[in-house]
Length: 142
Ligand code: AMP
Image (cartoon, rainbow, N blue to C red; front, side, top):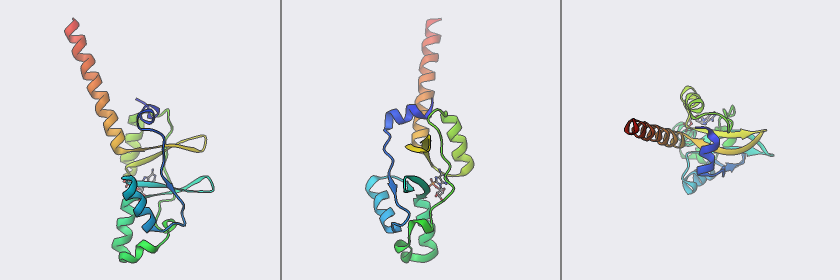
Protein backbone atom coordinates (compact mmCIF):
# COMPACT_ATOMS: atom_id res chain seq x y z
CA UNK A 1 0.00 0.00 0.00
CA UNK A 2 1.20 3.52 -0.73
CA UNK A 3 0.81 6.77 1.23
CA UNK A 4 -1.73 8.16 -1.28
CA UNK A 5 -4.12 5.35 -0.24
CA UNK A 6 -3.85 6.32 3.44
CA UNK A 7 -4.52 9.98 2.58
CA UNK A 8 -7.54 8.98 0.48
CA UNK A 9 -8.97 7.34 3.63
CA UNK A 10 -8.02 9.83 6.33
CA UNK A 11 -8.12 13.08 4.36
CA UNK A 12 -5.52 15.66 3.46
CA UNK A 13 -6.02 18.23 6.16
CA UNK A 14 -2.74 19.30 7.78
CA UNK A 15 -2.75 21.35 10.97
CA UNK A 16 -0.11 24.07 10.80
CA UNK A 17 1.10 26.90 13.03
CA UNK A 18 3.47 29.86 12.63
CA UNK A 19 6.96 29.78 14.24
CA UNK A 20 6.34 32.99 16.19
CA UNK A 21 3.27 31.61 17.99
CA UNK A 22 3.78 30.62 21.62
CA UNK A 23 4.26 27.12 22.94
CA UNK A 24 1.04 27.57 24.94
CA UNK A 25 -0.78 28.14 21.62
CA UNK A 26 0.75 24.93 20.24
CA UNK A 27 -0.45 23.07 23.35
CA UNK A 28 -3.99 24.41 22.77
CA UNK A 29 -3.95 23.27 19.12
CA UNK A 30 -2.56 19.82 19.98
CA UNK A 31 -5.31 19.34 22.59
CA UNK A 32 -8.18 20.77 20.51
CA UNK A 33 -7.29 18.78 17.38
CA UNK A 34 -6.30 15.63 19.30
CA UNK A 35 -2.98 15.32 17.49
CA UNK A 36 0.64 14.77 18.55
CA UNK A 37 2.54 17.12 16.25
CA UNK A 38 2.03 20.32 14.24
CA UNK A 39 3.88 21.33 11.09
CA UNK A 40 5.41 24.79 11.49
CA UNK A 41 4.84 26.87 8.37
CA UNK A 42 5.81 30.43 7.47
CA UNK A 43 5.41 32.28 4.16
CA UNK A 44 4.13 29.08 2.55
CA UNK A 45 7.21 27.04 3.49
CA UNK A 46 7.76 24.27 6.02
CA UNK A 47 10.06 25.68 8.73
CA UNK A 48 9.87 22.89 11.26
CA UNK A 49 7.75 20.47 13.25
CA UNK A 50 6.76 20.63 16.92
CA UNK A 51 5.57 17.53 18.74
CA UNK A 52 4.31 16.91 22.26
CA UNK A 53 7.76 15.50 23.07
CA UNK A 54 9.45 18.85 22.31
CA UNK A 55 7.02 20.54 24.69
CA UNK A 56 7.53 17.99 27.47
CA UNK A 57 11.32 18.48 27.18
CA UNK A 58 10.94 22.29 27.28
CA UNK A 59 8.72 22.03 30.38
CA UNK A 60 11.18 19.74 32.10
CA UNK A 61 14.05 22.14 31.29
CA UNK A 62 12.42 25.49 32.07
CA UNK A 63 9.24 24.78 34.00
CA UNK A 64 5.90 26.49 33.21
CA UNK A 65 7.66 29.59 31.82
CA UNK A 66 8.46 27.47 28.78
CA UNK A 67 4.84 27.93 27.70
CA UNK A 68 5.36 31.62 26.91
CA UNK A 69 8.35 30.88 24.67
CA UNK A 70 8.16 30.84 20.85
CA UNK A 71 7.64 27.64 18.90
CA UNK A 72 10.73 28.50 16.80
CA UNK A 73 12.88 28.07 19.94
CA UNK A 74 12.07 24.39 20.41
CA UNK A 75 10.82 23.03 17.06
CA UNK A 76 12.84 20.55 15.02
CA UNK A 77 14.08 22.37 11.93
CA UNK A 78 15.25 19.49 9.77
CA UNK A 79 11.91 18.00 8.86
CA UNK A 80 11.93 14.56 7.25
CA UNK A 81 9.06 14.16 4.78
CA UNK A 82 7.65 11.54 2.44
CA UNK A 83 6.01 11.37 -0.98
CA UNK A 84 2.52 10.07 -1.82
CA UNK A 85 3.93 7.32 -4.02
CA UNK A 86 6.11 5.85 -1.24
CA UNK A 87 5.06 2.62 0.43
CA UNK A 88 4.10 1.97 4.04
CA UNK A 89 7.33 0.00 4.46
CA UNK A 90 9.38 2.98 3.20
CA UNK A 91 7.88 5.32 5.78
CA UNK A 92 7.94 2.78 8.62
CA UNK A 93 11.68 2.46 8.13
CA UNK A 94 12.14 6.23 8.07
CA UNK A 95 10.10 6.70 11.27
CA UNK A 96 11.96 3.91 13.06
CA UNK A 97 15.40 5.20 12.08
CA UNK A 98 14.51 8.84 12.87
CA UNK A 99 12.68 7.88 16.12
CA UNK A 100 9.69 10.07 15.35
CA UNK A 101 6.01 9.29 14.86
CA UNK A 102 4.96 11.92 12.31
CA UNK A 103 5.77 12.43 8.65
CA UNK A 104 4.46 15.33 6.56
CA UNK A 105 3.62 14.34 2.98
CA UNK A 106 5.08 16.77 0.43
CA UNK A 107 4.51 16.93 -3.35
CA UNK A 108 6.35 19.52 -5.47
CA UNK A 109 7.22 21.50 -2.37
CA UNK A 110 3.57 21.59 -1.22
CA UNK A 111 2.30 20.09 2.03
CA UNK A 112 -0.43 17.64 0.97
CA UNK A 113 -0.97 15.50 4.08
CA UNK A 114 0.32 14.18 7.37
CA UNK A 115 0.96 10.56 8.32
CA UNK A 116 1.29 9.37 11.91
CA UNK A 117 2.63 6.06 13.19
CA UNK A 118 -1.00 5.23 14.11
CA UNK A 119 -2.06 5.59 10.45
CA UNK A 120 0.85 3.39 9.35
CA UNK A 121 0.10 0.64 11.89
CA UNK A 122 -3.63 0.72 10.99
CA UNK A 123 -2.85 0.40 7.27
CA UNK A 124 -0.33 -2.41 7.91
CA UNK A 125 -2.89 -4.38 9.97
CA UNK A 126 -5.55 -3.94 7.26
CA UNK A 127 -3.04 -5.12 4.65
CA UNK A 128 -2.12 -8.21 6.71
CA UNK A 129 -5.81 -9.04 7.28
CA UNK A 130 -6.55 -8.70 3.56
CA UNK A 131 -3.64 -10.97 2.67
CA UNK A 132 -4.78 -13.58 5.22
CA UNK A 133 -8.36 -13.50 3.84
CA UNK A 134 -7.03 -13.93 0.26
CA UNK A 135 -4.86 -16.83 1.41
CA UNK A 136 -7.83 -18.49 3.17
CA UNK A 137 -10.08 -18.16 0.12
CA UNK A 138 -7.28 -19.50 -2.14
CA UNK A 139 -6.76 -22.53 0.14
CA UNK A 140 -10.54 -23.13 0.30
CA UNK A 141 -10.73 -23.09 -3.51
CA UNK A 142 -7.97 -25.71 -4.06
P1 AMP B 1 7.28 12.46 17.68
O1 AMP B 1 7.69 11.05 17.94
O2 AMP B 1 6.70 12.64 16.30
O3 AMP B 1 6.45 13.03 18.77
O4 AMP B 1 8.64 13.34 17.63
C1 AMP B 1 9.80 13.07 18.36
C2 AMP B 1 10.86 14.13 18.00
O5 AMP B 1 11.12 14.08 16.59
C3 AMP B 1 10.46 15.58 18.28
O6 AMP B 1 11.63 16.29 18.64
C4 AMP B 1 9.92 16.10 16.95
O7 AMP B 1 10.10 17.49 16.78
C5 AMP B 1 10.76 15.33 15.97
N1 AMP B 1 10.04 14.99 14.73
C6 AMP B 1 8.76 14.54 14.61
N2 AMP B 1 8.45 14.32 13.34
C7 AMP B 1 9.54 14.62 12.61
C8 AMP B 1 9.85 14.61 11.21
N3 AMP B 1 8.98 14.21 10.30
N4 AMP B 1 11.09 15.02 10.83
C9 AMP B 1 12.01 15.41 11.76
N5 AMP B 1 11.78 15.45 13.07
C10 AMP B 1 10.57 15.06 13.51
